[in-house]
Image (cartoon, rainbow, N blue to C red; front, side, top):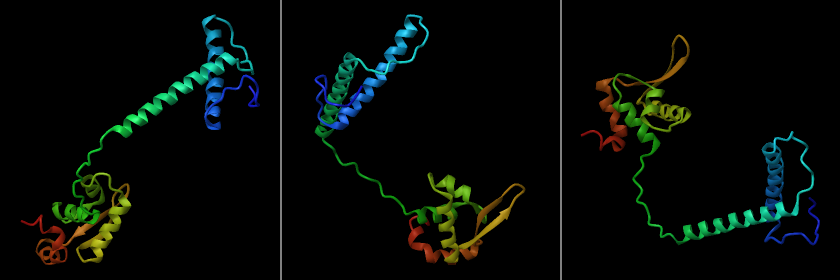
Length: 178
């Protein structure tokens, strides 16, 4: 099928629509050819290279129906009254990491534990926040070698010393220390 103008051309609203109809018509042409051979028990033959005008008209009809359904759907979406959804307050990522470290038992906190506690967090972001906590004197980041890998752990400051260090972070934790 050529894209040159002939008396059988089907007027559409844009050249993009024409391209969609052509693609749909070619797909339907190949499908109809293969289906007829399969239903009639005939061996597969090469698909003819010219698309019949009836298939092009059917493709245009299908395309117009889909376009109308799209327009109806878009109009329905526009007509819906949107009520604002109240958003819950979201804690900064650093606060979430700090709270996870403070709540964990024992002096060592694995990155995996923090990742499980903060859903959807990325290891590199957790490492950055733990490095900031180390810089602030809240503990230290250690790489501990195991049999198979090296695990990055955060070593918290032990119990009695941690109370003095919490003063630096008290504005973050004040609602948790009750």
